[in-house]
Length: 106
Image (tube, rainbow, N blue to C red; front, side, top):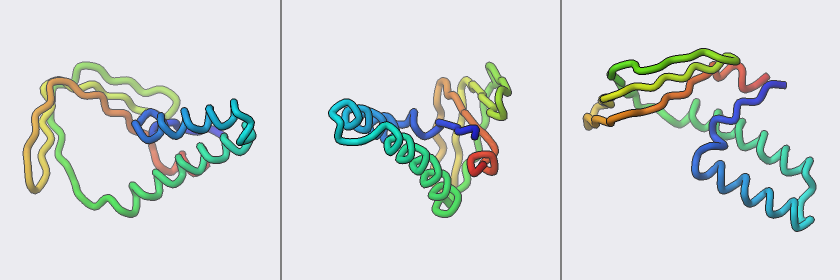
């Protein structure tokens, strides 16, 4: 089973991983249960993003780099502009990682 670890690199994902590692090292939690928690975390984040996020954003910028590997797209934009209903923000450089959400449930 292929697992995308997109959310594990976020602040909450990294904190969860560190906490689970400490619990495994202390013997509080088995490694198998820690892995199950991480897999459930990926599924929960995917479901939350699909069902609860309703806003749309328009992103424009100069494409610096792009790649497609293992069904994951990575884009690096320079001078990117994010525009939604309320605001417009400009960022110097941003990395966007995207994959097909259908592949997360496999």
